[in-house]
Length: 314
Ligand code: MTE
Image 1 (cartoon, rainbow, N blue to C red):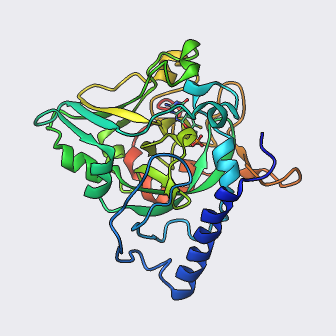
Image 2 (image 1 turned 90 degrees about the vertical axis):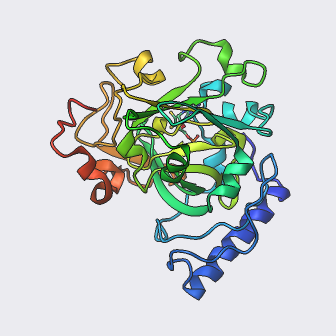
Image 3 (image 1 turned 45 degrees about the vertical axis):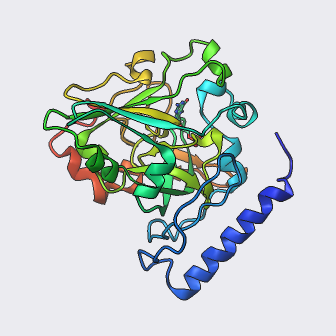
C-alpha cells in the first residue's frame, strides 16, 4: 500500500476541508440547502472535483474517515478479494460513457447516461456512518441524490414491489471475475419502501470528488442502516419486480446473508459477533464501538419493519 498521498490528491482535499470550514462558519453547513452555483459537472477518473452540490445537515457532527482509508480499504470483489485489490486493480474500469438500463415493472423500459442523471437531479452531500458486515465501520461524506427521485423518474407500475440492482460484469475490465467467488454479476435488492426512503442514496462522489473506481464509480447505492454489502457498486441495471430478488450474497450463503441485512447488534453473524465494531483509522488503542440498531438510524427507519421478526428476516 502507498505510504503517502500524491500531491495531486492532497490539494482537492485541502480545498474540500477549507470549504467545509467556511460553510460551517457561515452557518450554511446546517442550513439544509445552499443554492447551487454551477451545474454539476464531472470528468471520468479519480481526483476530479464535483461542483454545484448542496451541503446538508446529515452527519455534520461526525468525525470523517480519511480519504486515504475510504479509498484503499475496500470490498469490490470484481477486482479481487483483498482490501487493497480494488485500489490496485480498478484502474482499467472505463466509467464513461456509462448507461443505466431500467426494466421490469415500469410504464416503459428506459435508458439514461450517468451524466444526464447528474444533470437531472440536484446533487447533495450526505455524511453517513457505514457499517460493514465484517464488523468495521467508517464515516463517509457521499455526494449523490436520493434514489427516491430516480424511481419517480423511472415510473414503476403498481406491480413493482422490489428493486433489483445489477453491477457491471466485464472480464476485460474486472480481473476478479475470473474467480467464481460470487455468482456474477453482483446483484442486490431492496423492498420498494426501503428504496424510496429519503435516506437511500445513489452516490456519484465522495469528499466532493467524482467517485473513485474502487468505491463503485460512476454510480453506486448507499443504504446507511444496512450492512455495507447492500451498497452495490458500478450499477448498470435497475429492475422493478413483483417478487423478492435473490441477491449474490444470498446465493453464496443464505444461512449467513439474508435479504434485509439491517444492521442489528442483537443478531450475530453465524461466525462472529455483530455487537461491536472497529472504526477504520481509529488507531490501535481506540476502543471498539457498540453497534447500534439500524446503525443508529432507527428513528428514521425502524417503522419500515413494524411487526417483523428481525431475527427471522435478517
Ligand atoms: N458491489 C460490487 N459490485 N461488488 C462488491 O464486491 N462489495 C460490497 C459493497 N458493494 C461489493 C459491492 C461490500 S461487501 C461492501 S462492505 C461495500 O461495497 C464496500 O464499499 P466501499 O469499498 O466503498 O467502502
